Image (cartoon, rainbow, N blue to C red):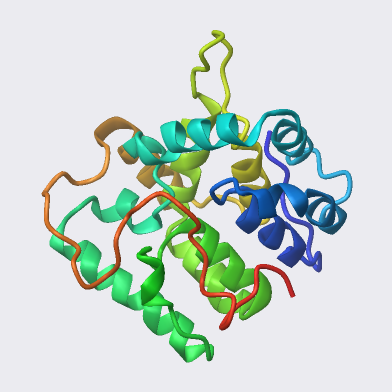
Length: 225
């Protein structure tokens, strides 16, 4: 059973750690693992992922990351995808993310080529800029967060084992959120059964979906405070 967040617990360190650990593996990320672990010492959901990132060569980590998050729609890190798929309504939802960032005093960096609903960016924003507004974005897309957790937990590895190493980060994020309400559980069941809407449209003007770091520009927002 997933742990409930205790009242009064500061969840920002978990959000900051997961923002980094769910990003595309780079030499800078591997060099920062000790600092990231210091944010969440002994966190049982993140211990395995930290060990995995330390144990494998960078090229293997990068290949596994791309295979997991960039080639598999059910493991997409884009929160609005689960609610809207690639439909016209998704563009409107993406605008809301940008407006939320702007209202908190930071600007989305269009030059990254990334979409503003990327989970790493939302967690980074919630951890270092506005935990209330960031937490609201996570709550509003709770079904997608839980769907991603389920998809990663059920990931089949090449050796026959089940469970992506990155599933621990989603468990850690979900443990910071309130218990699911009835309608949220229903939404998750619908996602599992039906999947996101399928109407294909372009998302020009909202950012691309290329592999690589998915962070708000360091000049406007740091990974960690």
